[in-house]
Image 1 (tube, helix red, strand yellow):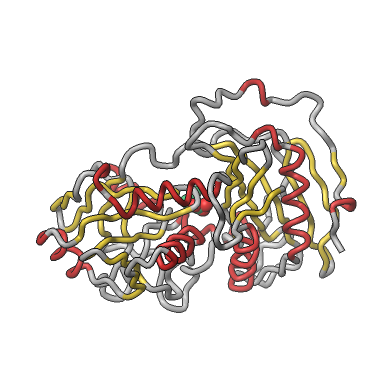
Image 2 (tube, helix red, strand yellow):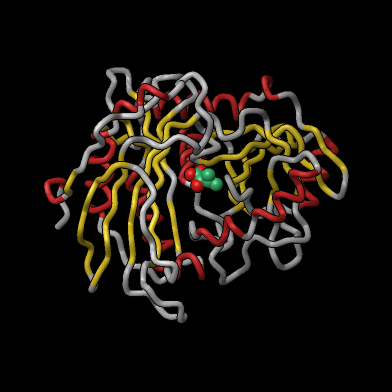
Length: 354
Ligand code: COI
């Protein structure tokens, strides 16, 4: 049993909070005062502790460093109208983390461990939750294998941690994406649906090639024929085609995004036409040419609802209509943000008050 009282707390002597310029927070560069750590040893989770955020010793033979046996999650906390901490859908992140863990041969994280450690850490660092619009506290739970062994085998030791960082926008401008038709992010039977570190590490090189040409990100296509749209690596992708919200159906090569799911549930709740199905590159490009694709956006925890300004394919850029006239994605962004901040009713009970 984990329970908050079993977590030892070693507080910082002096908080770094006063050093933070909350009006200009970059994504992922500033970390709060504390972090949570738990060890998995001899088949059980133990040594629950919150310590000052900082570097930590790690064996050079840690399999996570050699073989990428590491998974992570991303979620966000917001400051509510009364100053309370509101966390968006943490149970869904807990469940997804265990799906990733199973694929990567890592131990189950009990709900109590995940939630209690999250509550305790957020409680301690609650003053770090930005009050500024467009900002939030990004929560990064992660787990890695911690055996001191460089043979390949199922590890027996693991470390589970949570770190927190106040963040601003991940993409500060509308996004330019390129449809990738050479490199592959994930293949059937692979780890694409898991939030495994290697999925992201392997995507950096192809994304960098696109970034060198002025794009922000890729839209990945299926690894077999590069014929169907999958996801964008940092976010799921969604389109408005003929007044219908369309997104690729989930497969084992696509991450089941929690923002993706939230958008779909809200859209259905509002009575919008929604389709989860295969979207071919041809359908998308034809639709961009004919003007039937009127909106495109990414959906992710870090990215939130990120409007896509243009889509590159085969050395040609296809522009979408201006962002400020997009009725679907702008409505989703506003409503979802208001739910997360506790400003409007939360029809699906997504918010957990901490
Ligand atoms: C998230 O949205 O939480 C992610 O993990 C994406 C990451 C690439 C920043």
